[in-house]
Image (cartoon, rainbow, N blue to C red; front, side, top):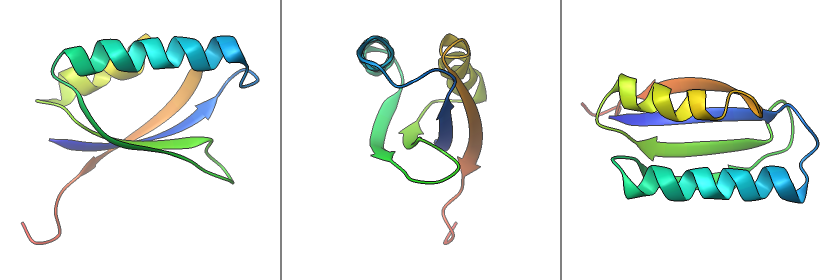
Length: 82
């Protein structure tokens, strides 16, 4: 399954917040999560992450790990030609 996570950081984006998120991404990608891309954005969200996960439960686990540092709105992406 393909997911799009739209992220707003709760705290200032300092070195510690970035370092923790990079550690979490490293842990995620050792498991069943495949990150397709991460983009910094201007506007309502700070970053957008596109990733693959085997199911909604695994995607939600990834979101909950970060709940203390960021607000995340997540979408399930379905190919238009499906």
